[in-house]
Image 1 (cartoon, one colour):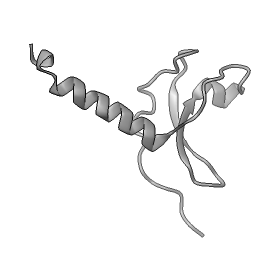
Image 2 (spheres, helix red, strand yellow; image 1 turned 180 degrees about the horizontal axis):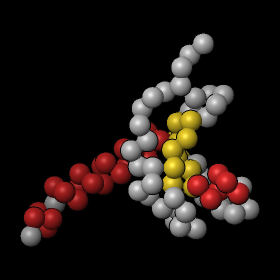
Image 3 (cartoon, one colour; image 1 turned 45 degrees about the horizontal axis):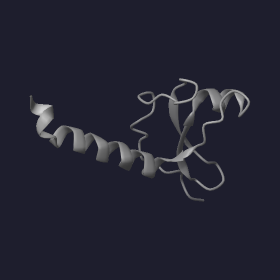
Image 4 (cartoon, rainbow, N blue to C red; image 1 turned 30 degrees about the vertical axis):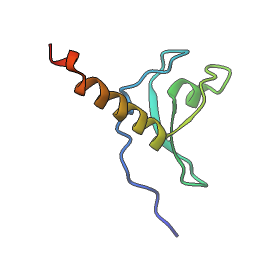
Amino acid sequence: MRSKPTEPFALTGILRCPPCGGRILGKISGSSERRYYMCARRHLGGSDICSFPSIAANDLQKAVWDWLHEVLSSPAFGR
């Protein structure tokens, strides 16, 4: 029996869902152990409440860290 991944979901509670404003939270799929982020409102109320899709955790984290690196390394940031 394999244990679930233990990597943290660093973006949980920081990001907001674009369509509804709900918190984005990290989840692990029970069957495939896939790590993903999803809207908390959708998680609790279903797709009738919010239609924002789940996003692979590694993909979202990489996109956010790449954007943050770009912002922080910009010459305009130090002004």
